[in-house]
Image (cartoon, rainbow, N blue to C red; front, side):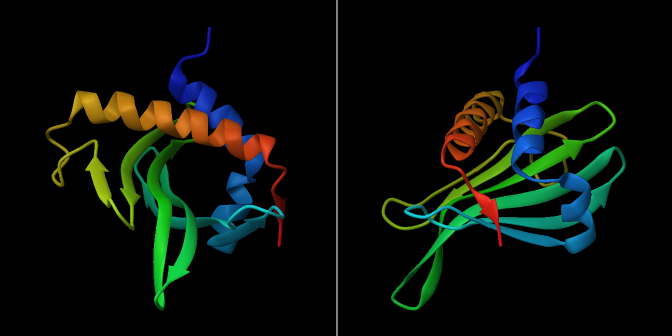
Length: 132
C-alpha cells in the first residue's frame, strides 16, 4: 500500500514531467476557467530537489498566491513531501513543516500540509491542465 508521500509523487508525475522542470526551471500549465498553475524549480538537495507550485492572481497590482507550496522531491525513493504553504489575501496564512535549520519539525503542519497537497493534486488532475 502506498503512503501519502508516494501517492503525492505519483500524482505530481502525472501532472508535470519533473526532469523537464529541472531542465526548464519553470513550467506554466493552463486550464480554461481555472487560475494558471506555475511550477518553479528551486534548488538541488542531497537526495533530490525542491520546487514551488502555485496558483497566482493579481490584486491591486500585486501578485498573490492562492496557494503557493514548496515541496521536496526524492526521485530515487519516488516520494514528495510538503515543506511550506502560503496563502495571500484575507485571511493570509503561512505554515512550515521544518524549522529553518531543519532540526525541528511541526508534526501537525506536516500531516495537514501533505493531506492538502494530496487533495490539491487530485483536483488539479481533474481540472485538465495542459502545458503552455
